[in-house]
Length: 245
Ligand SMILES: NC(=O)c1ccc[n+]([C@@H]2O[C@H](COP(=O)([O-])OP(=O)(O)OC[C@H]3O[C@@H](n4cnc5c(N)ncnc54)[C@H](OP(=O)(O)O)[C@@H]3O)[C@@H](O)[C@H]2O)c1
Figure (cartoon, rainbow, N blue to C red):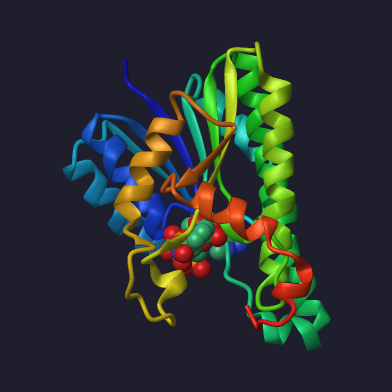
């Protein structure tokens, strides 16, 4: 049966890699992003790769009304997967002095994403099947001086999705939070990318596709980040405060 997939933040590198996986299976894709031109190019590419249908929706996900999601699901006769992939890597130094910017970052990465997640959970719960997969981050596992605004948003989103997973248990629908470590994407273009801890978007896409079927509700990507974050969370504050991490 044709899979129906809705991707919020479809132009993210991780979302594109995921969309390609589903296109190759002949899925019908609804792609939501704010750049109409790039979205049209992506839609054409995914059709060539095998997607049975691609419907672009151009909007700013931080501004739009999440009740749109119910309409998209109904218009497509149901949905098998909603992926929430959009996000912004907060400039921590700026957020410390520009409070309006800091609040806007929290509103995008937590407030708006939480709204879409709740709308998706309600739609999937009503139809009694399908998965909500949300991209969080290992940055949400411990507050650090260098990225606590981004980390706080991802931590909040993580608790929300964990709660949604609990709510959906037994309904036939499910919710999963993916916690990636470092991914080589435009979001991290400013960072040096050497070392074994970096992943390609395609690797995270495979984790997403697997999590859409089983596992969770919290999935580290790759799995070794679970152990790394277990150690990081256990470090005493007195030790962490001697660093500038
Ligand atoms: N890269 C990493 O190392 C890493 C690690 C852990 C978690 N993550 C998370 O993984 C997810 C995907 O990130 P990525 O690495 O694939 O980053 P990316 O390629 O930079 O993609 C981020 C996407 O979010 C979109 N976006 C931001 N605000 C939006 C809004 N208000 N409305 C619509 N779209 C919006 C951007 O669209 P525009 O082009 O229109 O701005 C962009 O396409 C994010 O949630 C990120 O926080 C990333």
